[in-house]
Length: 206
Image (cartoon, rainbow, N blue to C red; front, side, top):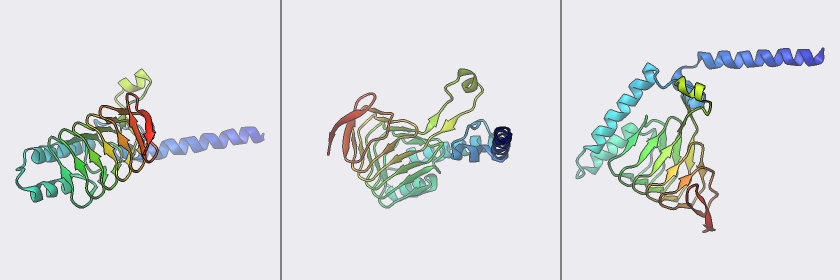
């Protein structure tokens, strides 16, 4: 009887979890890292707004840095002092990007921010760096159904990411890390480490 009772209560707990998930909006599911549908009208409207803000930024006057900074502050979730972002910059939503002081992003960076992307102080991103929080189900039937997921990315302080490197969903990069150009980072990187390659592997400590 105790085992049956435990099973019954487990079933109740699972049902409650499913019910709670069903009550969330697709945006809330996305931010929580649960499967969500990107075709949801609210999310589609938010992506359209972000694309328009990116377009305005990317075509703005390079001789008016104050106006460019104001555009970035309207796009990002939060942005520290003295940011420098070169166009062409693209992101999914913008509100999920949180950057510290002295952010530098060179030409052509892309941030798929369906989950939070946190960039510490003095983050240097070379040209063409891509940060992907977006991912898809492994099961082909579930993937074809249109659901997506997100896993957050965290980049510590004083990190330099070389040009055309890719940071994959769910990765945490420690402080004072250097990531070689063209690397594909699929796992967490400990602080004060140089990594490079596809997949990125430790080269040496700093």
